[in-house]
Image (cartoon, rainbow, N blue to C red; front, top):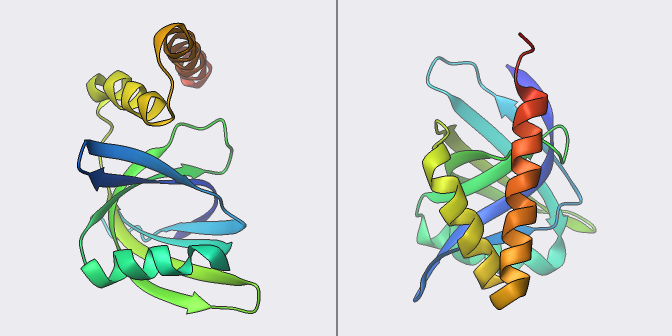
Length: 151
């Protein structure tokens, strides 16, 4: 098994108007590659107690969740994991939410649409939406260039 630091957590939430992405502020977190040949991962998110009822509600539904995790550095591209909540532990000042799931292969063709949906759910429109969308696409391209092997 390999353990990494979890630096970002976003949950895809299904609503009346389709899916939206909800960023969850982390106090700390770990993500563990189980290295079982099946691409299974364990994610532990340390969160403020105010998120307890939200995660308890999600846990009671027992549905698989699409979560996006950023590993090691905030500048890394989030990885998509289909996961279930395994446990919620109440600590003195935080809660610990334990997820278990399977990492999905990247689907680059859907990323601009998801990015646009996310910006729309943040209330952006018109010229502000256009500028934010262009900026995010530029940031993603720059990250991809930095990650590409030099030839």
